[in-house]
Length: 167
Image (cartoon, rainbow, N blue to C red; front, side, top):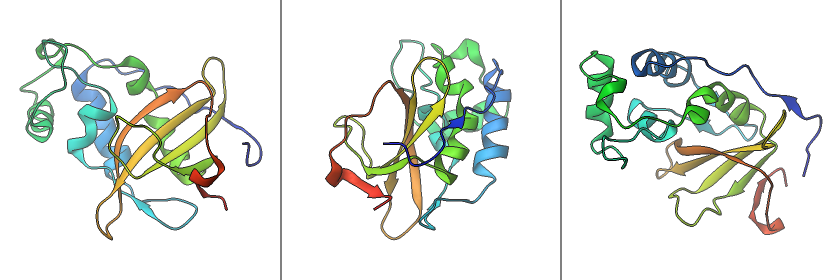
């Protein structure tokens, strides 16, 4: 399913503190307008940050009230010690989301049963380990696509009818 040359994966983000990680996210993702090859806009908002890095509460579950949590991280009222951790792979590969949107290998209908969303951007990277990364997005009415979550995939299992782009 390769749509041309496979792109080298961008450098990993080597940040360990939640405050610094969120500042990178806000500056580099929330502060940009990203257009996919179809001309559709993908908009990152601060409230999605906990899901994109898989931030966990002290008991290991999903954080509740993510926007409130993000605001407290932003004001340095909460830090790593206040949580049960985050997924280092997801955090380190936040920079990969940009080329995934701008130059995806495929855009497909969301096939992940337990992840809410309408479309998935899939990018094949030239790297060791898993080959693909996916970004699941939800479309809100006629508004832009909003990221839900992102995670690695070792292989693609697609039906041709699920492919939205390229046609």
